[in-house]
Image 1: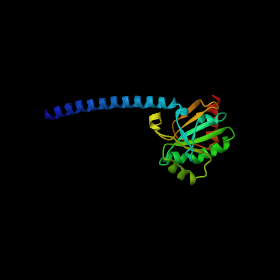
Image 2: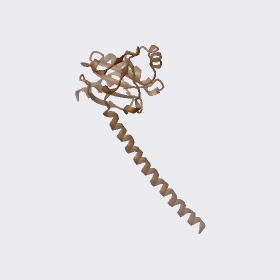
Image 3: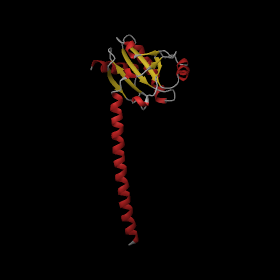
Image 4: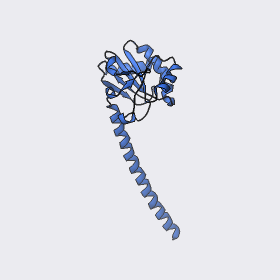
Length: 174
């Protein structure tokens, strides 16, 4: 009799815990989904960007070119992994594009990283990415020639430079 009671009470307790975990998971997923939507609508023009000399610039300075803005960090292995193929992609698109790699780390840390790499990117610093909705890296935005965000790419780029170039150009066309 005692074994049946333990089984029933254990089953009931386990079921309650399972339902609570499912409810928490659903709520957490909804929260992440809402954050992802807000990131996609982040106004990149509101951020203050500094070049590696500490000079402030705005994305509007690149009007007339397509802009790829990539948020990254020196400690982010996937970010660093995608840089070589993005550099090769930039080589294919540089006539009409500018690639801006943005971190909220110190200018000195970004400079030290950039000095050891032959990348053709514009490296930039901004502050408080988390408060602007950029809660993870890497992620990339592609802006049209008028500075309007046309695509939010929420993960690393994979594949060859030509396939990534084609993907980006298709985003522009559609």
